[in-house]
Structure formats: C-alpha cells, structure tokens
Length: 73
Image (cartoon, rainbow, N blue to C red; front, side, top):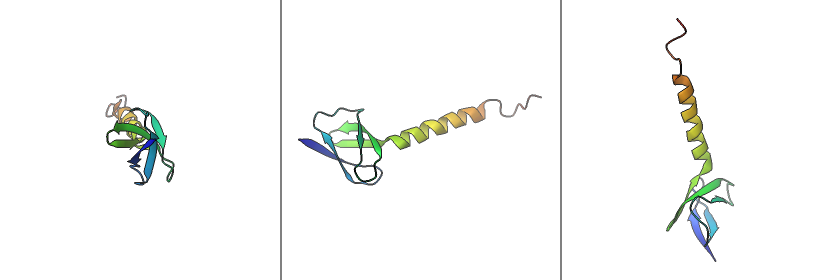
C-alpha cells in the first residue's frame, strides 16, 4: 500500500510507501525532481533543488560580505 502527495515542481502525484519517514527522498515520475518528504499527514514534499539553490545563495552572500568596502587601503 502507498500514499500520494503532489510534486511542488509540476503538481504531479508522487507515490510513497506507507512506511516512508520524514526526511526520506522521493522522485517525481513526471519531472524527475528529487523531493524530500516534509510531512506525512498530509503527504508534502520540498524540492531538493530549492534547498540547494537557497544554500548556494547564502554562501554567495557570505562571500560578498567578506572584505567588501575595505579594498586593502
């Protein structure tokens, strides 16, 4: 038996096992996005691509802040 949730990227139904746990990764059969299970009742996913993009943006912002405005003068 399985449970269904909606892909946050393309809104396709994504099937997970009934014994799946929060934090596990599922794949959308339509758009092939990797999805982290963030809720089981109801089943909800978060796209891993979104998580990676957010982390990369934060790292870039941290790099931009270091030494800006000093120019070594």
